[in-house]
Image 1 (cartoon, rainbow, N blue to C red):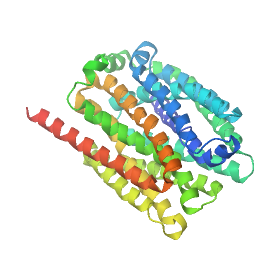
Image 2 (cartoon, helix red, strand yellow):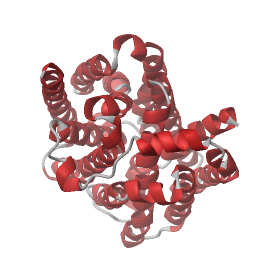
Image 3 (spheres, helix red, strand yellow):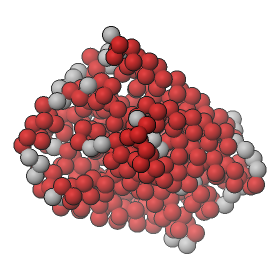
Image 4 (cartoon, rainbow, N blue to C red):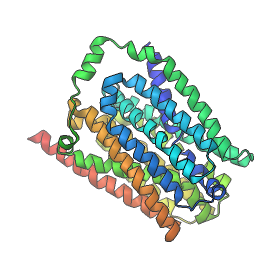
Amino acid sequence: MYTFLIVTIYLAFVSLGLPDSLLGSAWPIMQLELDAPLSAAGLVTMIIAAGTILSSLSSDRLTRKIGAGPVTALSVLITTAALFGFSRANSMLALCLIAVPYGLGAGAVDAALNHFVATQFSAKHMSWLHAFWGIGAAFSPYVMGYCLTSDLGWRSGYFIVGCVQLFLAICVLVSLPAWKSKTAAEKSEALGESVPLPLAKAVRIRGVKQIMLTFFGYCALESTAGLWASSYLVRRFGVDAELAANFGSLFFVGITLGRFLSGCITERFGDRKMIRWGILIQLTGAALVAVPLFDGVVAMVGLVIVGLGCAPVYPSIIHSTPDNFGAKYSQTIIGIQMASAYVGSTLMPPIFGLIAQHIHIGLYPLYLFALAMLMLTMSESLNRRVAKISLE
């Protein structure tokens, strides 16, 4: 039963990644068909991220009430419905309306699953589970690219991914007895260590503001990189839109491969070093994305490297939360981290959309570089504060 549960959790992480990269890979074509401005993709992602902020802040209460398994099943079903809705949308207004449940479905499951894994599994499983998120995120652009090059259209891309998401939702529903089969001792231990904490008190804990800004920077970079990669390749280097949809997924391929690798070494080096090295690799990749050589090939390599740098950061931050702030506060703080991350997803991609539309899309790598520097500054500040607490 344990094996069935862990397999289901891996599938749930695939379902988390499936919707995340679709809009960016399809947007160069969707924009033309819907007669929308370039920056409108940022508005859709902003609405999605706003929903995730609300649901992630309420995830602690919801998970305590109905359990991590039902929260996961319900959320995957909601995102499935949203994907099918996107496949039928014929206007920007429709996209914006469907984006609301899309975001609400994503936030609660993200926080619930991450807390469950952080408290129940080792660091290597955290990295490998998030690698399966990358499989979902890398799979979607390939589906979309195939649909675009085969003249099936972007709507077919959303529909096919929606069908895959529906299959994963059924798998989670079937697995619900396995979630409930955890022994009473395991349940009481997991819940007993966790203490509800008001938001105002949580943010006053030493280091919480730093980790919030680190997560803000991380999700801002990840979502901006994924959303605008295809448009950057098309407008900066003249790559065909269909080809760019495929190559735009290289960023997510880098994340996926990097997380499988991180899972093999993270227990040797520890969460803090993995976060630091990951951010330094992001900075290197962002610099390469700016290099205008070989018709964008160097930039594509840079996207992979940025993805490799992103790989250890998210799972290592989540996994280190109980150690940094105590297991009893970890559920609440992980929810706050998720909300802060989605604030980054809400604000920063549309801001870059405005920069791309009114200034120049060539500022894309500089934007990524600045966000990586924010992460490095805040994470190192957190490390110093935690080290100071341990000496007191």
